[in-house]
Image (cartoon, rainbow, N blue to C red):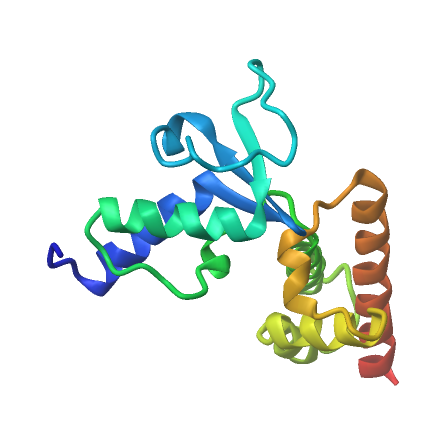
Length: 179
């Protein structure tokens, strides 16, 4: 095994994961990046020559991830799914919407266009990860884990609802802080 720093290993894992993105029980495997490492893997959906990805099972995606790790001479991971998150996923869209709404509120407050305690808004903005996790955990059906939303593609309708939810949360916080 080649000696890499922890930061270098993380960058390699991230690069591999970006080529193998999990969507629920499937994995989008970038054909060009994974060439030679997925030849023996059964496709869930037959390959389309015009598509840059092959669709394989989640388990096979993890297997290919670790083959690529061995090729790069870094330690394979037992559970690399944190590196294999789907672009445009619900988890990231929720965090982005909350962060955007709260940062905008801070700017409006700084410019005098929003009345209320800037410190209270900044406090919530400073713990956006915790706030989104708590809000979403309450909103999700039983048995659905907040972190699994990293593997669910956000549709335009979902994004609209996420933005509305973040807006209402901000409005509730502003009203609460102004009371």
